[in-house]
Structure formats: C-alpha cells, structure tokens
Image (cartoon, rainbow, N blue to C red; front, side, top):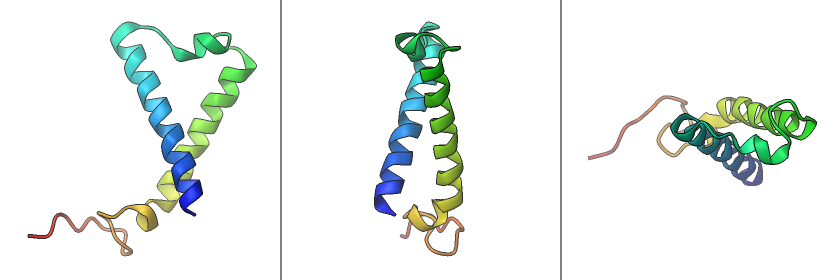
Length: 77
C-alpha cells in the first residue's frame, strides 16, 4: 500500500505543480506532450484524476494527522 500511496502522491504533486505553473505563467506542461488535446496529455490528466480518487479513498489509513478513525486529531501538546 505504501507504493500505491507514493505513486498517487507523486502524481498529485505533479498535477498541482502543473496547475500552479499554469496559474503563474499561463504555460501548461502538457505542451511538451503535444498540447491539451493530445492522447498523452489526456492519459496523464486521467491518471492524475484517478490518483486523486485513490488518495481520497485511502487518506484515513495513510495520513498521520487523521489516524485510523479518519478524523483529524490535531497536534498533540
């Protein structure tokens, strides 16, 4: 499960950085893949979307802040 978490987190990080770059500069990384309408870009965006769904579904188990109950515990003082 750690490998799945690592892969989905990495893809979400890539997607987030892409959107941040697009918001700051108006430049989209998918241009390297042939533009937004290319098959490679569609596969990349679909994979990132699936990663988001998997991360949401498995978040309670993977998150150290949420614990096993799935509710945010907050920092312990």
